[in-house]
Image 1: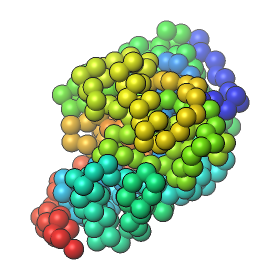
Image 2: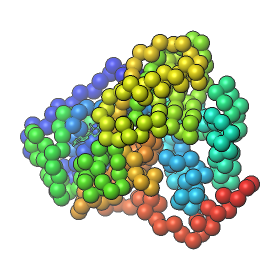
Image 3: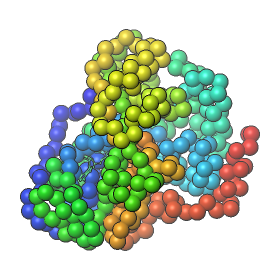
Image 4: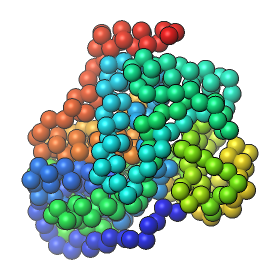
Length: 383
Ligand SMILES: Cc1cc2nc3c(=O)[nH]c(=O)nc-3n(C[C@H](O)[C@H](O)[C@H](O)COP(=O)(O)OP(=O)(O)OC[C@H]3O[C@@H](n4cnc5c(N)ncnc54)[C@H](O)[C@@H]3O)c2cc1C
């Protein structure tokens, strides 16, 4: 569906090698970590068990929605207003950065969250109020897909095009990239792969789905699930002007410039079958998506693609960005929304692994202060 046909290819590692930093995982997160380390002047080796953008980074809904995995009012309630707003601002700025870094892959479309019923509309109004209270541009909209909240600053990305562009940039800037090279084991200063050992000063594990398998110490806070999508032929019977999320964010769709619809969601229809499931589509979720396509988006366009991919969720809704053993940093568990947070965390993980500060790391690990709790209480009041 997303495949842009211009596939960069990198060899498998076949010898022992040395670098300042080894990055495990060549999704957008790992590639951002690599580019950051190169910008700091360090030598980098990046490896992937499959191919560049071969995981969720190349198989997602392509929505760049600023903020955390939780809608802004929920983030304010959970993390405090000051912290939630600062994290929102970082992700909003990341949209601009991604648009500059890979302009061919990004469309500035805005994004819409619609309500299916009165209860969800109440939640949309709470989101709207919390965003307005923090000075975030947001509008109430009545659309053919329902009433909702429109955020003009949001965007969409062609995820494989972006992933492959980042890989080319990383290679051009001197990183050594290896595909079909799985990290079998890692310990401080060394990553073992089937074809050779990588000796390094620091390691960044940039794997979203399956993170807790690679780093078992995270298993009490991180859990992998499958997310599913479908895509259609160009639809001529409907116009979707911007990406839409519905059903409390569980469902999401967008229309590409050529008319094709990309639709994902339905995980809340069958949580149990999706946890730990392999990266392939299932009948139950796909049948649900068919229903959304016909009854909610109201198109008869033929379905051309169906797929599933794996991501990790965290128990507190915040991403993992931490040192899991000496000079080994892990990042992932973006709870289904890693296009922006993954890029931020990738760069931050590289900086932290190499001994440089990161504002994002400080924010994610900051205890909720009294002032932010107070601010949270303020924004929870009716406006
Ligand atoms: C269907 C779907 C729709 C989504 N929609 C959106 C959306 O619209 N907006 C949004 O923001 N987010 C969305 N997400 C989430 C987003 O795609 C991910 O959070 C993000 O892409 C994660 O990127 P990553 O580079 O961190 O990880 P990944 O893409 O998971 O990349 C990790 C890489 O590590 C490799 N790897 C794994 N184990 C090893 C190992 N042992 N050795 C070496 N390499 C290894 C994998 O092969 C993979 O290429 C969606 C996800 C899915 C699945």
